[in-house]
Image 1 (spheres, rainbow, N blue to C red):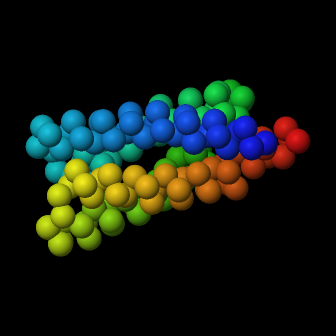
Image 2: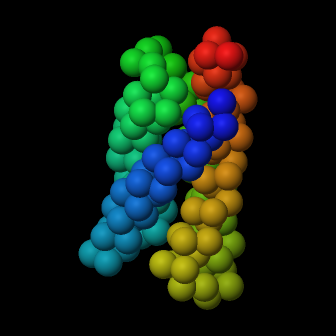
Length: 125
């Protein structure tokens, strides 16, 4: 079971690089931070669902995507609120995005573990 958590973290790192790269590229080409965050989240959710499902939890059950999307919608709102707060204080949006990665990744892991893939983990014991 601990191996799944390690794989989740490693796959999450790849997913994080992917999502942050999309966000950074969009900021670089002058997208508003809220649109950049939204588009990066959409691209990231689709990429993450496939990698986490197949590599970490060894499932190809596409019906889990609704719960997966719910988790990412929630973390998106947290991220967007955080970006707004950082922007009010004049914090660099690259730095703000990076700091919020840490917070949102942790929340995403907990929610995926307890809400989306819980039955997958339990059944593999």
